[in-house]
Length: 103
Image (cartoon, rainbow, N blue to C red):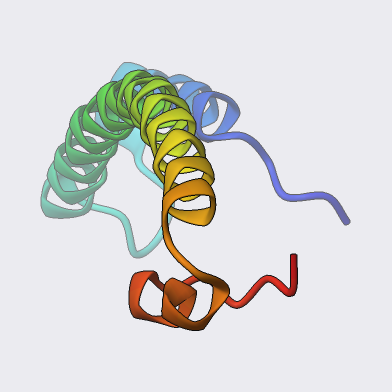
């Protein structure tokens, strides 16, 4: 069975809470006001944590794009440096610069 999304779980819990509150005078066996409070508090915490997680996902996407852009700049500069080292130094010294190419 597929796992429900957080929004589906949050929505189902809200409907249950509303139903239980609407029948607070006739709650099912084993359920009292303390249970209802616990369920409501838990749902509130899940909503908050879900919002925090979504913000972190957005921040991660932004930071990944920033990292990718800066990596591209670095690799362009690295390629330029490697090319210059290979042109200006004898092959025997290339290892000093981390170049293990044969040509």
